[in-house]
Image (cartoon, rainbow, N blue to C red; front, side, top):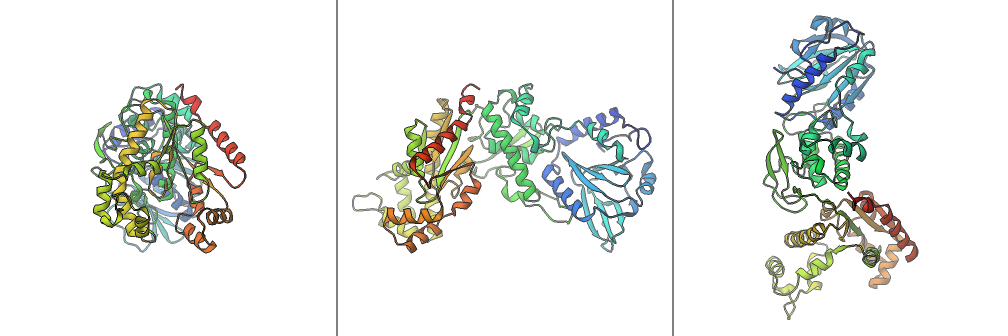
Length: 517
């Protein structure tokens, strides 16, 4: 049996906690944590939020403990049961993967470990055999602690001793407070793998195996990269990826792989958003290469061997997009004129769809020879009529073209990366719709107010207002693209105004700094 605190903290409630006891408990638990997955920060935070909504302000009438080793208390289990009566829960906080209960007089540090669950249920609900602590509340409900493996711990200290007890956990920074400078300092001091560093709770508190794999995939960093070889840009990517994936996990209510449930007994939803974890043998969302799994830092580790290489990637990739008639092409042309390396997806597609190419053969197989002209070129008007307002046909076209596009895109981008280009812009009209945003460190959306968009589309394509509105309505709304963008360019005024916004955006990029990293 493994204990996160192997012995009770010496001294009476209100005295300072024994530092060596906490340190030994953490050392032993860190060895255990390498073996299995457990609830990570988003799952624990979801539980905390549930407890705040359902238990705060309620008073304990009685406590029943059926598995003594879950309780860490100087006065033993009997003392714990007696001391907690008539105490009211004031708040529940979280530090890393630990839940912090603040009652009227005492505090708890609760670690769920692998299978621990806090549930709030009506008292008449039968107590199952995996329930080891039952707390009867004055509301007629029970706060119950369930733990199939019995590895979780509840440690009680006097409320005024909680700050010292928490400090002795020696946890690193919370993901939400993570900064580039902090992580640069930590990584440049170690020759451990980046995965080992991210799993170290003394560096960043709350990240476990699932969110570590997901963050590294988003940041395009191989889990076996030696930490002090990461470039400034890669560390900046990683900081953003960690914050993004943790926040997304919280928003989805955590990840349920096997047994995790929140305070209401509900499963999480982030498992449906996992890009690599438990997806071995399935296509990478970014480049379609099959996800691999291997042991890294004694943990099952999922990654894309094409996207996440052992070679440093110091090229900032920005995706440029915009809705129809918003002026994306204007911004694209200006970036080219300014000397910014730019990959135009429309140009890639046009090249791929030349006669007698492998791509054309695949299109003919998918849609029939009627999509060809008498000269064996692509009849774009006919193909467009087939897919317009036909979601299945449009999906077939995207599925047919994607492998060829991804290969060409990867080749062009790799060439820039090998030449150490500090910045590359990907001009992709359907950046978000087709999932190419995963290739990008930042996204730039060109937008205009809808009335201007309609008027420009009517003038450009000789459409009636109704036709223009229908064309716009058939695409993703501008507001959705703008909400997902890193930066937006308002193209509703003069060209000089648009160019000025682009120049300001370029100056704000960390490219000059990255060139020297």
